[in-house]
Amino acid sequence: MSKVANYLQEHLLGEVMTSVDAKNYFSTDNSIFTIQPSMIVYPRNESDIRKTARFTWQLAERGRVIPITARGAGTDQTGAAIGNGIILVFSAHMNKILEFDSKSGLAIIEPGINFSKLQETLHTHGRFLPSMPSSGEYSTLGGAVANNSSGSDLIKYGELRGYIQGLRVILANGEVIETARINKKELNKKLGLTTFEGEIYRQIDTLIEEEISIINQSKLNIIKNNAGFDLMDIKRKDGSFDLTPLFVGSQGTLGIISEITLSTENYNPETNLLMATCDNIDQIQSIVNELNQLSELPSAIEIIDGNLLREAYSINSSVFKGLIESPFPAFCLFIELDIVSDRILKKTTKKIKKILEKNSINVSVEYELANQQKMWKLRDISSYLLSHNYGTSKALPVIGDGVVPYSKVNELLVGVYKIFERTKLTPAIWGHIGSGMVHLQPRLDVNQVGDRQKIFKLMDEYYALILSLGGSISGEGNDGRLRAPYLASMYSTELMTVFEKVKIIFDPYGTLNPGVKFGTSIEDLKQILRQGYSLNHIYNYLPRN
Ligand SMILES: Cc1cc2nc3c(=O)[nH]c(=O)nc-3n(C[C@H](O)[C@H](O)[C@H](O)COP(=O)(O)OP(=O)(O)OC[C@H]3O[C@@H](n4cnc5c(N)ncnc54)[C@H](O)[C@@H]3O)c2cc1C
Image (cartoon, rainbow, N blue to C red; front, side):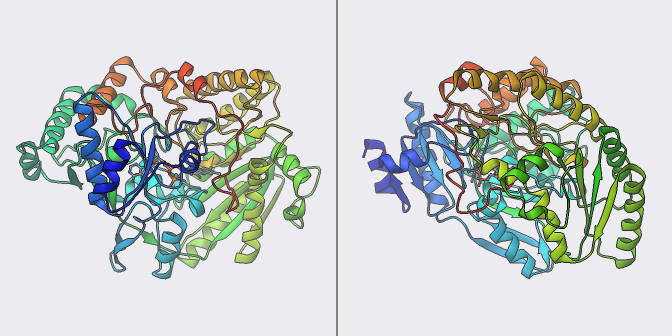
């Protein structure tokens, strides 16, 4: 063990590990990148995190920077859960529900809890937390909060950020703060503190006051934007102030979350699911436009395309039985409704059926849960693609996390198909079309020079397309290392300067997940590409996307 690891092990309740095995395991997440950490720390409590942060701060003051990368389950696809310093693993010990009030639906939870386990517990109380990512069975709440993750219900319930009421956060120097919306008087108290917390409040408050018109440039006409930092809802017109929205989606680059206070929704397992097939992109656009105008929004508007259907059919045709047959349509849509009132559910289902019948070939409605589950299995056939080996190629998570205004999904689809055509790759599309998001994971071999070049060509073209449509490069996923080099093409130099100032205010020595969101170039990415890509962290579960 190194001196640093020894020191930490002496002072922490949790375990410190430096074995080659452990370092290898934590040298990858679900991105195409790899970085070897110097040690792994499994904090048992908040004090362990504070001690680790204080120690790295003190070393950094003396010129030695050891980064800290917080980690949940490491399913991040942008290289944000790897780093060359300390990996702070939350899933081992800090994974409990600390409080839950079934009346208000408010809960206080540790970040390492498995998302779907939390969801199951909430269900038993008639509640649920929207925005569970499709990786929820094998990822943590802390990772979801730090990534501002989302799922298919984004269209109805909005982003996870909206459910996070407050946080306990360990700052870069080991101080702990509690965030929540505070009034003007409480803000004044914070501004008067002589601690690092006070310094942060003063500097962020001044930055927002001085740069509000630049900050407002980050507002786009899209459902969700994870690119950069969310500074827009910190200070409201009534003078109230809350740092919570800033920490949500900041990928551990501003502080380390030790507790999450969140609100939940009433859980209604009674849903209707409609499936429709379409043969052209204009039909998809008309349907998406009309569905987005409904007073009762669907809880999911999902798409898979004919390429994916053909591809998945050749791998495993069993889930297609009774649902869809070859020759496959160009697109298949899935629309879910989770409305509590039976009368409104029936009325809305009828309305949606009419919209679909106007614009598509076949429409079916499923009321029974068991049959709906079969339909969802068809929606989830992208999992076959993700886990399949195409010779030495794999479906790589390098593009496909962007979001555009829903009124431009036709242009998004046309643009994406053209990119695949130009790069001579077979497309396969799935995703949350109603929210302006589609996923695509091109099948490439990270070890082949030609394919490595294609990765960067695809990224250049795809992110340019997303930006030309007024979208965000980081819609569902976050920036991480993967999209850090592209952030400056999305925002003005002035706004980038504001983001960089925020980072320095919270992390003056660069100990908090450096290289994530900022400070990574395309050249840097080329240096950390993995030899071979696999989903080896998640095969205990069915990979879903
Ligand atoms: C097959 C597949 C499907 C996916 N589907 C979706 C999807 O539907 N929607 C979606 O949004 N994403 C999706 N993802 C991406 C990823 O799974 C999610 O973002 C997930 O929420 C990350 O959780 P995690 O526990 O794995 O976090 P990790 O990967 O461990 O970490 C993610 C980020 O959070 C930070 N972090 C973790 N814990 C803390 C903490 N306590 N304090 C501060 N920072 C912290 C990490 O440093 C890192 O920056 C998918 C990934 C895969 C592989």
